[in-house]
Length: 351
Length: 241
Ligand SMILES: Nc1ncnc2c1ncn2[C@@H]1O[C@H](COP(=O)(O)OP(=O)(O)OP(=O)(O)O)[C@@H](O)[C@H]1O
Ligand SMILES: [Mg+2]
Image 1 (cartoon, rainbow over the protein chains, first blue to last red):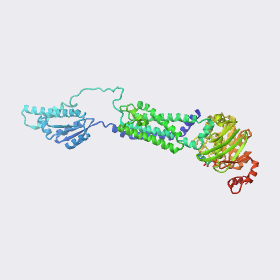
Image 2 (cartoon, chains in turn yellow, green; image 1 turned 90 degrees about the horizontal axis):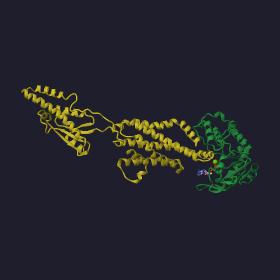
Image 3 (cartoon, protein in one colour; image 1 turned 90 degrees about the vertical axis):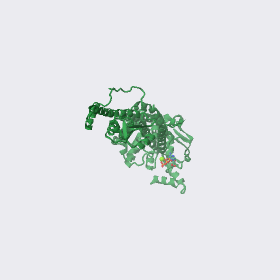
Image 4 (cartoon, protein in one colour; image 1 turned 180 degrees about the vertical axis):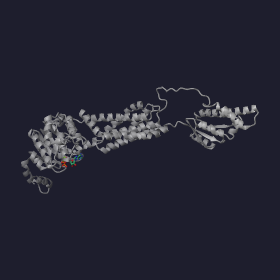
């Protein structure tokens, strides 16, 4: 077998540019699309509707302060729009700033200033409700303070009122509202909290298909070798042909493992900050990968013609990829899904 | 040494060898000629153990091929009709590979001799892909014979060679024959057969039409009928031209 290895290595060196290109192409493609995917993954902002019926200085101020929050996505709309969006599930909740909001607050009257429209399922909007309540309280308390001072001083000049208000508000700065010190710790729980995002599993599936195709491509030259009787010749000279196929099998195995490893490293590198362990789960996926590669290898002996082999590989790999992806998205049932290498891969990555 | 006993071969329904019985003795040099599609290559492949006959048996030193395939292949060098080389490798790497792949260890002096006679030294560092057709054929033959086999089977080795290359190759084969090797060669070229072979097999349509010495060809030629054996007549006429 040794001469075959050195032969295959020599052929690999001769074809190094082709190999590098075929390894580098998909990685480059991944590099180009990764910002898009990362963008999609970061959309953990909570969508909140904002209906301003007052259009006053106060209502604008509250809106600005709330919108400054990370993780919130404030969308301006009318009351009816908000209700439809909540029914559709596009919004977690919405806040309606009633007409005369500013007037009421200045009078220290907090009732019927804000309406809260929420969806039954919403979990996050209570968090915003608290935020909003604090901001409104801030306005109300400052107003109350200013009004109280004016009452005590028995002043009627409204320009003084604003000075008192701003003085009261200055106690909220620079850090508004009640602050607590906090420290962050990394979660050391062994099981990742979040499931691997679908887009990453999808990319793993694409990489899997790609490595599979590369393995098939590596096996393809066997057909011209059969045609020009190279195989017969090897058989004659070396006494048997098993060494040749054995060396080929080992090489294609190593190549598949190598390419899969590169793909995983690249995925891990690009999507580093996502809570998942691509490497660990991906390494287990070597089992379905090699199964796919060996079935492909067996295809060499099932198909005497090159086109038959190509059709066979294309069919099984694309069927595996598309059906498993469908299964992944739709959560289909059925034993025969288990026959698809991609399904194994996806299930491993979901764990 | 090799004996074909009523061998029949088919490609699917195409009967390519019909009841072939022939014996090839050690140290003989045999030329095979015949029209295209006559079954010459098929015959040689069976002899090389690349193909198995559907009916009949082939024996090597009294043993059926199936029983002695390893020993046979060790002693046999078969050069197929197509050039089968790794195009991307240099001639040097090519020969090195075949040297290592061969079951029978080639001896250095034999290899050197071969390289000298065929003039391979001058192309040693060239890639096979860059060689001319004639040179490729030479390298093709050298790769298949470098383990110094006792039985040499060649399928149209001189096709596409210029006179000088053909001369070198024939010189080499003649030298091997003089050393006692058994040579069977398919060729459309009478000059090759007449210079190398003492016995001729003529195939036509899967049948062995003639088996005899070069000197018997003339009398065979006279037995051919004008209308039925036009094809063979043409081939035999070329010999005298
Ligand atoms: N692999 C194959 N599959 C099917 N038919 C084949 C195959 N190889 C050869 N044949 C057919 O078998 C017949 C004998 O072929 P063979 O190659 O032995 O002829 P040949 O005498 O060597 O011809 P040539 O002078 O053209 O080389 C031909 O009709 C050919 O078409
Ligand atoms: Mg032929």
